[in-house]
Picture (tube, rainbow, N blue to C red):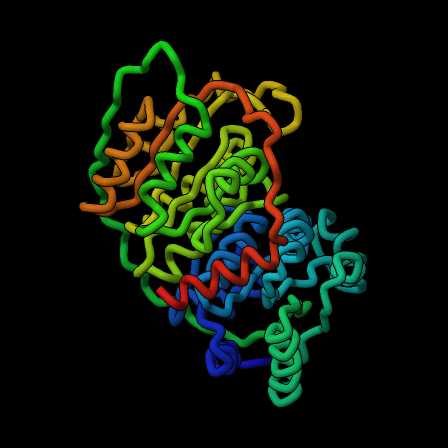
Amino acid sequence: MLAAQQFGEALNDLSYDFYSGVPCSFLKYLINYAINEQDFIMAANEGDAVAICSGAYLGGRKPVFLCQNSGLANAVSPLTSLTHTFKIPVLGFVSLRGEEGLHDEPQHELMGKITGELLATMRIPHAILSTDFDEALQQLKEADAHIERGESYFFIVKKGTFGKVALKEQNEIEARDVTYREYEQKSVLPTRLTMLSAVKSYADDNAFVLATTGLTGRELYELGDTANQLYMVGSMGCVSSIALGLAVARPDKKVIAIDGDGALLMRLGTMATLGYYSPSNLYHLLLDNAAHESTGAQFTVSSHVDFLDMAKATKYHHVFAIDDEQTLKDSLQEWDTIGGLTFAYSKTSLGVKDNLGRPSVTPAEVKSRFMQHIKSE
């Protein structure tokens, strides 16, 4: 059995000081260590946790992802279309529920058989974590070598691997008032391109911008490619989780996440996580055209969702219903002055610029220069 406190300190010696995940009883003592001693973000689901870790990595931290193997399936999309695509390495610990010969719940039976196969299919190097500390320490050093080469690495953790660490008493999150401001909706909706232009006019000298996958990132790139911009590809719905990881990892930097209605609907639990951890340096902008425009303008169900009420319910500090380029600029300037986790919402019209191009830089190149820009700022 490994002493979880000692193992966590070994991780810390290798600069792993940022954790996100979803609990499992097999990992509870390592999770307790992380909550007690490090930056830890409790994610709404495992895919969000991978994205949060990715954001922390963009901020220069070395993140650790924790999950039960049943939840590993929730993480497949970001592990294959985010961390793999952008070459973002994540150190993972996944429990082995449903291990052959171990009496367990029926829902773990299949995943217990295929956990290693699933990691191999995703081309993630992995090993079963030893219960001998010296051997586990050597494994950890080998895993760190993979991370330093830009490759993710996962440990499969069997039952009883970690010794007890008591969870320290946690401070209660203080109740907060929510500032709400709504502008009268104009008869003509702004275009997404116009709103992105307003963000860009503020952010070029002031903030780091992450644009959701699809047309949003392509249009932002079209307005002018700069090192402070990251264009999502794949991993639909993960942009706000990445922004959360970055904002927590680098509280000295201003972060803007530009979301779409279809993307946010896919991972609504992120709003609750954002509201709980509430980084004051994060501005979450939702542009809602009620459509999956990148794939042919099929409808979303956003017309039946009150995103503003959701932001208020999940305790964002400031909630703005904006209606045009100027009110967006005004809200960004207010956020710049007073800070506080901010949610800004605007309906936008359908329509795409003619002959809209795609970024000529690869996702890995975008990531590398984005990280370099953060370091140099």
